[in-house]
Image (cartoon, rainbow, N blue to C red; front, side):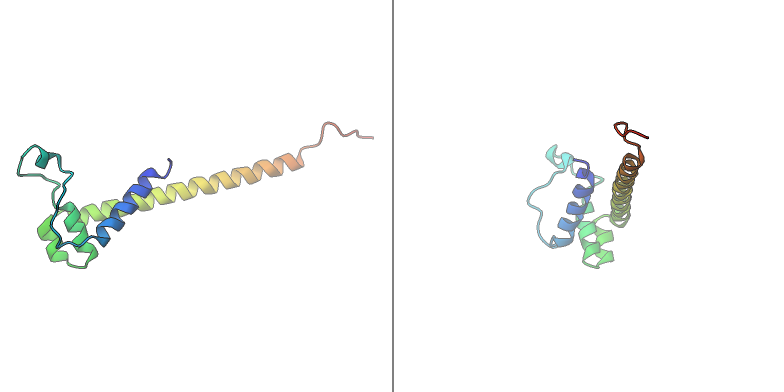
Length: 114
């Protein structure tokens, strides 16, 4: 599961991009709403990000003032994770190629030198 976090953020943003921002919310994952507390500092972030994807920055700011910032942080995290995974895979490929080359250059101990 080395790509779990990367996949989670990408799929989350894709689902927010495809979501209709005018649709009523039927289910909430908000812990504060479950407890019956009316104020939640994070509520509205999903709608704010959805409004950004639909090109309406004014509605995004109305839904949650931190939506644009949250989207920026998530996109930066996606690029950081993708870069890290790409560099790791590149390193593995290079180290495997070096190991193969070293195995080829190593003299065979079973050969007799005359």
